[in-house]
Image 1 (spheres, rainbow, N blue to C red):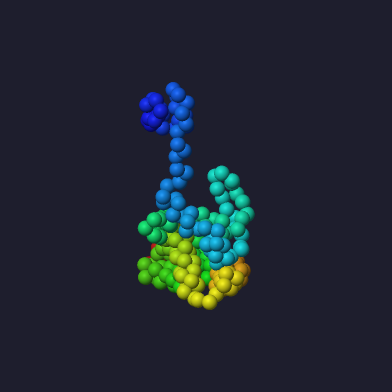
Image 2: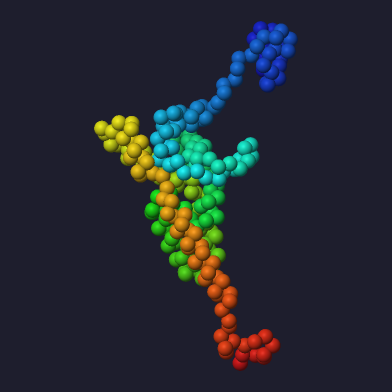
Length: 225
């Protein structure tokens, strides 16, 4: 409840005018300080730098308000990156990245030019499966990638921007050109992914169609020893 300053009438919190005298209440602030700090971190010029670094590539996106859409990937990432902003500085927030989970994480990190993480996800699942003898350990790696991809990409881009600001003597146009070269995606990875998945499918089909060895006992043939 809130009190009218003109007649001391108690009114509901959502009331815009006093129920007794009609005196208007002051408008509530449109955003919290935390939200203001997020918006300040992405002003017009700053957003353009991030957009150039993310690149013009489009992606399939889904929201409960707009449904499925084919939009620039930068729209998605800039919206997600705001969740990592706080008045105290960047912080981790749990998000989910479907492409990094559904497709091979190694390919997604390579597609986004995150070479160190691509190497980790190329070797990590193989080594883990070798040490544990459990091929399903790769699912754990995919879950980790899906939960952390947005945050890792945020810091990857933020590091590029930090290095850019450390370079003196560059005008705004030169900065945008440098960001286009350093950022963006590698389209060839899409074809690499198709080739690898077709190869994997071929191996699975060949393994299924491979007849059992001649000395393999047939069903109902009795004990081996």
